[in-house]
Length: 237
Ligand code: ADP
Ligand code: ADP
Image (cartoon, rainbow, N blue to C red; front, side):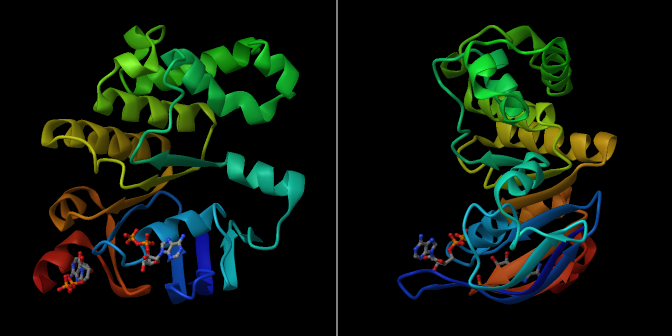
């Protein structure tokens, strides 16, 4: 369970990102956050794993406040959260496999992993993850030789290799064409179903949200202006 209690975020320049957000996301939900550019979607998503600090309120995951957690414990909490970005964030000159293994790095001493010494268990997790997104045959290709959609599926595999229980995807399909958009959304939804991974996705297309979400949250000016099922979203639109 991801719980927001009266969460506000004001950027250092005074811009209001979030205003008194109260929100509970239950395990296994596939939540799509929609809203116009500048509405606060990204601010909301990035608050969950503390990619930035909130100004007031509290965010907890499974009853434990991430807002007040520090150091090693924070790193352990973050390990349970996979992050997917519009720009894929892969190491371009590395192989697909190495990029997926990056999801395991937090589990070991840096020197071992820098030398490329991953235990057998990590290799198994990485290959399993690649299999889930149908990218097993691309394991030894360089990341920058893949199409955008394939790169995004590698970043999903990286989150799986990390054994994330939560996936946060910030505009994961914004730079993809309509066909690849579907493949990536299909993968995210299938993984959510098969593995029960709680998924929160930012999108700016309401149509896509209706098609995939179990729950749609509409955001405007840092506030939640809609929270309901895709059917309810259709009724109101
Ligand atoms: P505007 O008319 O200024 O675009 P909206 O009423 O569309 O503002 O609300 C802002 C955002 O919240 C929109 O981008 C929309 O995606 C989302 N939203 C608002 N109401 C709904 C709704 N009933 N169903 C789904 N999304 C909604
Ligand atoms: P969205 O993801 O819905 O496009 P954002 O969360 O990125 O919206 O932005 C919400 C508001 O916060 C916007 O007014 C935006 O301009 C502002 N904002 C985002 N990032 C920063 C920043 N680093 N510094 C100042 N203002 C920011």
